[in-house]
Image (spheres, rainbow, N blue to C red):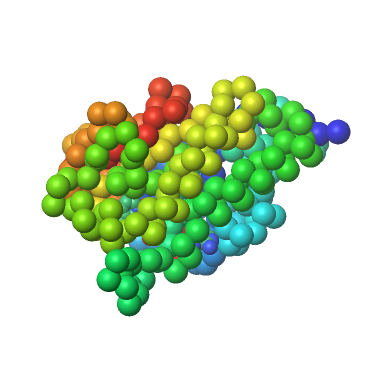
Length: 277
Ligand SMILES: NC(=O)c1ccc[n+]([C@@H]2O[C@H](COP(=O)([O-])OP(=O)(O)OC[C@H]3O[C@@H](n4cnc5c(N)ncnc54)[C@H](OP(=O)(O)O)[C@@H]3O)[C@@H](O)[C@H]2O)c1
């Protein structure tokens, strides 16, 4: 028989991407414990060390699981880390489940010979696949360890502007680019958003709540010293979006850390949050 605890750690997917890496840097600097899936763990540690995260912080606050988002076993290890120190009573066989999931998984853009849809991505269903696999992993964890359902994590996913059915959130000058050139990658983001919404519920969902982040065109990289700062970010919601051209990846990551990771994100549950500068 196993039991669960509400050990506080944040599970990251896509943490070698710019936005999510910046979020992880801020999360570790704030003293949180985290787990992260990485196809190439050394890439992740190198990125963190380059941002001033010490080896000691990596050793004590972060658990990296090597694996692909197709690997349910690896995803479950990220979601139920058992090597993290807990202030709650430790019980033999205790299963600890992440309190929050942050996912910035995405594919690599690729050009192709098509006038109508010249841009695709290397894995056109990567966001939908990642979300389905995270949901499946959680359901298997809940089935094997029913008490973990008391501590279901929330999820925050990085989507994009240009996918709203409610309000236009792309500035006029970018509309052809977003609605024609990026149509394929955006289909994947829409499926991801629908999956997240359908599986988030305070009582019965795989996730106890969900926040969808829709940044405008991303610029820069994960370097947290290069952003303008999260307080300068313009923030909107789906029916009243913040419309703008670009935002630095470091600012997206810092905003998620400040407004979701540090607060628990409850006040944003159910929102599709547009971020731009
Ligand atoms: N480009 C834009 O202007 C724009 C605008 C709005 C939203 N977005 C979206 O915002 C999100 C974050 O973008 P970003 O530029 O910060 O990050 P990114 O460079 O797109 O990073 C993608 C992340 O996903 C990981 N990944 C990809 N395939 C994987 C797989 N099969 N298994 C495990 N991990 C996998 C990558 O790992 P590896 O390091 O191993 O490749 C990387 O950590 C993406 O979904 C992107 O599409 C982009």
